[in-house]
Structure formats: C-alpha cells, structure tokens
Amino acid sequence: MAFLAAVLAGAAGWGAEPATNGPLAGDDDLVKALQKVVIEGAAKGDRPTVHLAIFSGKAARARVVAADAQGISVLVEDNKIPMAWKDVASADLAGLVLAFASSGADFLAFIRYCSKENLPDLAEKARLLALEKGITLEPQAQAALTLLSGKPRPTPAAVPAAANAARPGGVP
Image (cartoon, rainbow, N blue to C red; front, side, top):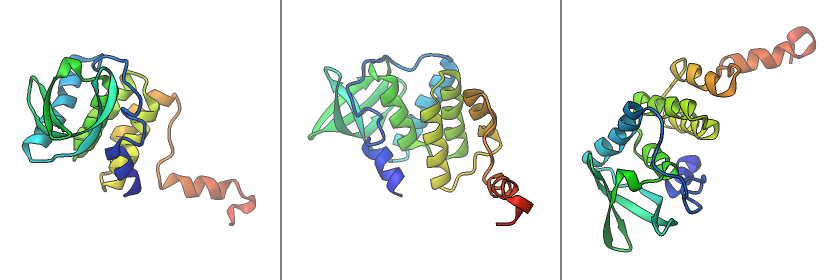
C-alpha cells in the first residue's frame, strides 16, 4: 500500500516538479481512452488527491472533484479550479490516470500509451500498481512492455526457475 499512497500523493515523481510538457501526444484514440478513465472514475465518485501543474506551471496538491469531455475540476485550498484537457500536462495526466485506474483495461491502455511514447518508467510503475491492486496484466502487458525494453520481461513464475537454473545442479 505504500507504493499506492506514494503514487496518489505524487511522491513517485508525477507532477513533483513544474510540468513543462504539454498534453499527452500520440494516438488520439489512446489519449481519449486515458481521459475516459479519469471521467468515469470521477463519475463513480472517486476523489483522489494528485499533484498538478496549475499555477504558472508550479505543482499544487489538488483533489479532483469532477471530469468531463472538456476537462477536469479540482479543489486547491477550497478553491474550485477548472482545467481544460489541453492544459493538463502529460505528466499530470499520467498521475490522474493511475489515480483513477481500476481495471486491467485501464492499466493496459496506459501501458500501451507508455509503450508508444517510450516511457518505460511510467509503464513499469503502472504494472506494479496494477499488481498491488490485485490486477494481473500478463500476458497483455507483456507485449507492450517488451516493445519498450526491447527484451522480454520474466513472468513472476519464471523468476524462481531462472534463479535455480543458475545454481550448480539447480539446487538452492
């Protein structure tokens, strides 16, 4: 749970520094799918606190109170602030998506986006957060993560076998 708390609080690096990048680039359908994760989560009543670049690019701790096709509304020190999607930096949207992600499809869409945009650290954090929430992404995420790293990642079951194979006689 410590990792989940760190991600939701922004301690994992998303939005921790002033965001200078623009909105998510790349595949428009994939970006819309990521925004949909946030919109649906807000519609269910989820109200996570995240770090967003709101004030002249400076990160502020904000509670998401609403989201729709035009953007999000957040509370910062009891002030409701609307933000259009075009004003949400990619690092901030990544934190939003991971705060709201609740299904394998949510995490998989995010990992696929990371794969297309060459963001291996965010993809790995998403994979670990999904596992922490009890969501198994293998083998779907395996393909996207392999594209990122250029080499296959071992599955959890394959790790002990590989470790034992390295020992003489395969005995621990």
